[in-house]
Length: 342
Image (cartoon, rainbow, N blue to C red; front, side, top):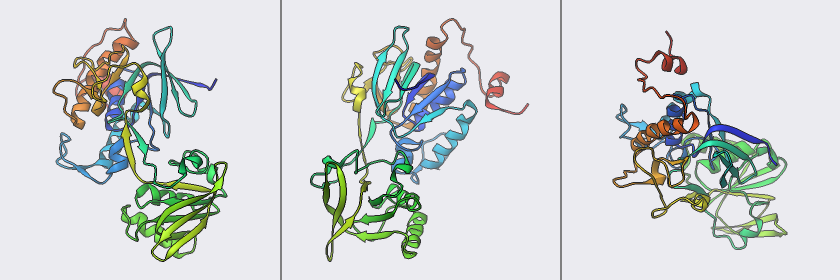
């Protein structure tokens, strides 16, 4: 059996709502571990529109999505949450003592007294490019996420896409891969201008290759990739490669959560509006993934849900402890937890 990570609360989803839940839970001295399928905190905000302004966060007439994530990370820093990225939760079971055992897709095991599902619209799933026979190479030569860079050392890598993920990994892998080729269907890119500038500079220096076109075929056998064919304006080009990294965007699905025995309502998880608990005691759902009459899919609604969830979670984790409501503005004990100077 893999080593077991033990925590008070396991939060599935490290978007803004999952991050703020750490703050509310931390005020009640509950340790949190967050797990997310993406490779960084921030969820949809960080992955899909990091520079998009948000206008309905209280106190901020306008704040960028990534800036909001950065401020939330700063806010929860005093509580020292732990993170596991690039993992999808695949199984959940209740143990004899009433706690939960959660398993991730790489075999990691987490034991928690409370589980909080803050997975937005569900787990992000990479979009499979329309390349014939690609399924035979997935999880061996075709990778939709980079979980351990070292595993790509010495490989001929083809990265496909024109967004931030494609350019970030092109630049990050260039020093360790034998050769990196970036393939995009057109000369214009959707990534951050600074990343595009760096990519062109590395290309001009001869450290990477840039090919304009679309991958149309894969060659290899037994799941081992040998080359890819790129269809361009001037015909087909065959590129030798042992690893293909397609970044064609993400789609959201409820995923394995749908198999946990929770009541569902149109692919969402019904909760009560007192505790935001699901049909299974000890499992809570906050943010866009939950449903109740009058539900509004807003970040500020998720913040409210996290605050009430934390009160209920404390009763489960410390049933004999009396909960005293305190304001962060005036409570010296809360100031101490937050590191506020005397």
